[in-house]
Image 1 (cartoon, helix red, strand yellow):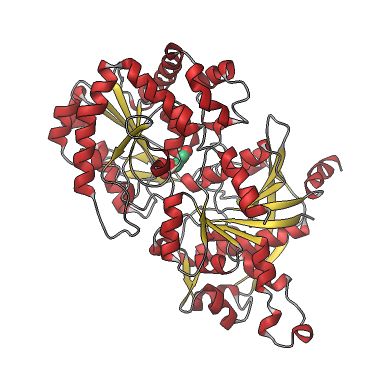
Image 2 (cartoon, protein in one colour):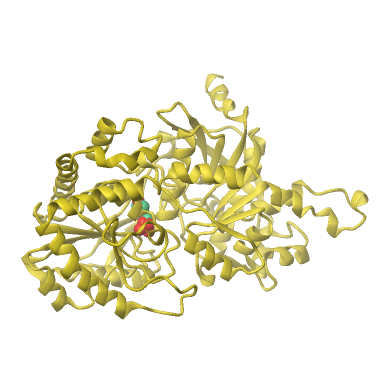
Length: 573
Ligand SMILES: *Cc1c(COP(=O)(O)O)cnc(C)c1O
């Protein structure tokens, strides 16, 4: 039938299969939790813009990550996100069988077509086990993104890696490279090992029949986690109980780690190209995994997704073609200052309207507004600006407004406490320094929040921010960064020109050093002595920094630049 033919067209070209546990394309498809998923979504959109032959594979996450609300005490409450895949996606024919706890489990895929204004188009497959005939508990495997315990996670990774690889084959996709976005899909390497197995008679010995070289040639691995503890790992008893013996145990231990199955190790051993997501993160990862060659390809954002309508109209007027060739933003200086200021004022008013609707607080468009939004997890230190509330009050009374957002993982009480602490600051600061914590941070909230503030604050504990991407979204909208020198900002920062740094230069390669005290002092000092005076007393110089954020940061830190590097440095090798 017609429909079937229309998806079959995707199988005509051999493709790069991009595997990611989470993908964030739009708010309506809630199959992402934060930066990793949004990055994956932006990657796919840019690949479509550039007409790259790609197919993306992820999980359907029928209950989403979660919807965030707050109780009267400011404590985060979670509820399932209800969405109906059948309203947005097409169910594809064909089911893969995988083995979990000795049972057959069927896996099916839903199709979403990413279409670019350039005419490029590519398929995203959402894997799903909620199929009649599967055991009730197996039908829930693809419900909750990052939910459940270790065994639930392992089952999801089997669906993603092994189920995904098998479904691509059943549907007729020809894959020239597999790109593993983080270690969650590493099990696909085992499927490939089985697939490429040589006959024992030809190779003489059993070990040599497992042709790791052929699998390596097919795989590209991007690591995102700069700490050892952050990498997914599973005890071998659990692996054996849930997966059985997919490849001989001694071979699995050789490739995936002696004591536990480490998904990062497995991917490192079976990929010919491995990269971190910023230069510094490449170095940190290299120190974590000596013996492997780790490259660095700095992340980027999809400009058309993250430009506010106000700024995009302006770019269209002065720099036509910028969305598919963001390098054109280097000429931002041809745009008159007043028009940049107007566009920003538009985005600011649009955000403030939202703040009033959601939080019932009226922000003043004249005041310097600081934004901070990202996953609420300890190392991101969302509450750092409140380290000395009395000093902040002294510096900021009548001059500052603060807007926050971000979800804590349901099991992360520390993250929830951090949010609660921020939400409970409002009383101490009163009306002279308004503070709002917006609920339910997601792609929609981000695209309204980030362009509408005047400065984007980021103060993670170094070197834990592998890259960070929200600061790039800010820069694109003429919102300068005020950030600790970590991740991409080490590459984008020119002091007082593109924005401002917080704390000392980035010399460490481990997490043993904690610069909190220095960071806090520097944050207050720069706010008081540099940023607040510049904003209020020299609007021309301020606008110059806004333009530099666009012309010196956004022109480079975008997905188009990044994708071209993946193609030339990873996919074509
Ligand atoms: C961009 C984005 C992030 C990533 O934020 P970082 O500051 O880079 O960690 C997280 N969540 C959402 C919804 C985003 O759009």
